[in-house]
Image 1 (cartoon, rainbow over the protein chains, first blue to last red):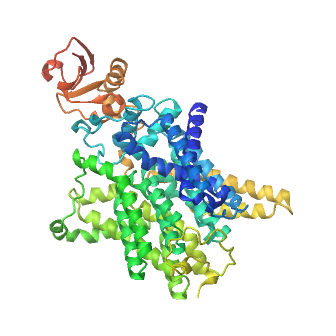
Image 2 (tube, each protein chain N blue to C red):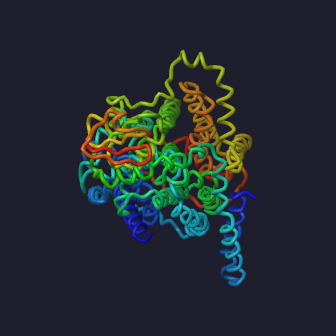
Image 3 (cartoon, chains in turn yellow, brown):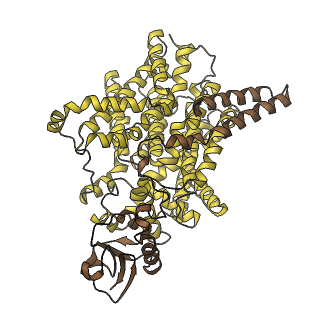
Length: 482
Length: 152
């Protein structure tokens, strides 16, 4: 186990280095402060690896530590070169209150790590899809090139979710190389590290907007929530796509509030990571950019709209190679095929779909978090506290449910097995978004807690639409509200 | 009691413990220890809860073991022999004579060997029948229950 643990630690440090390089390029390194950026780096690196490695696989490279070393070196060199030219002042130091989160979240995370280190892969999805692709990628090619083979996607591999992108199998293959053997037990630790990195990243990102105690409690709840822990152990692909997408959505929201382009850029990295993990992220990402576009058009913020369009194109561009490959090889899933005729024919399924999704979203494994968050948003609306944040959450929440309803509505296989197999998993992103947003919503809805001001928000890097964004008050503490 | 509720209590105790640190070291350590013990005693329930989730009925004991229904048919031995004889970078094919199931598991454990069509490889796994019944000829062949490994 020591050999495997050392290998995992080594590759995750390299991934953190990759993330650090990206943060330096984007400009988030200075804004977050050195300590904050170091905490943010691992999750950034993981998301960037998920997004970058698949195109590199198609280009003939292998998911090995050697390739990661080169990627990290290039990212760091590029980052240092770009950062030296910047005149933007450094952001405020993170402060010691981060230790509060670390102390509180350490117990559930350590326990989850212990459980993950002995968890055997028994789920059919490992066998059909993720671990199988990782084994194939691990066993072919050399240190730098030749891991991917077109025959992995032949008809002999039907029922292996051939339409899924290769981000996560590439990460698993990297872990296999680092651990020195193909492993389906200790590799679970990698996904706990993803969860820990996500919680830490959310701390850095949301810390300027929330009371540290409330945020520490909320993020500890993210790490300790039974639902997310179960997903981490038994469906880590669902946890990974949920965490990367939610991180992206939160950063895009912060960009809307503060206008700093670096937040949009970092959010795009996370969204690209989610798109490279599972195809389920496609609908959510499309919905997110659609909502952002509508909001900016409504506000006539044309320069911000241009920035959002550039970000959307960049995110799509990262997913395009795989979509082109999948189209060329006819790898698409036939489970869902949208068409107006099908929707008319299957309109009678809507009550069943809505009932199933509603039941999943308020499942007891999530301890009523969703109803609580919805109640907080309604209270915010009634009390006139940061209404834009409440509306943003509610619109995103119900928009994601509507998108899922649309997907299930266009099913081509038996509906009931499909819902019972997948509804509790596809809803994970909605639930993680709610868990992350809950501290902000609860704080604004229920109290007038004196909060520290955001120290790091400066005018630098703003998109330049003139006066501060009218959304900005939505992200301020309750005390600043009307 | 839900893990979530226990987690919240543990968090509260931990915060209280940290708050008491400067004034009452002993009390602080006791409270923190209590929080840790409570958390440790509940973490196993996460696994118990997972059994109630959708999707888990498909779980098998472990991916590297043949599903129970297939063990008696010699799949485990067939897989072991195929892994030892077929080089990791090579290809193989599967030809079921009678419906056997379990081909997904074989495909998984034989990776990174690539599964291809029978005409594209020298290694064929014949399932549930003889090579003659499958129309497969070869220079060497090994039997495992009702299954065969054939090298052409």
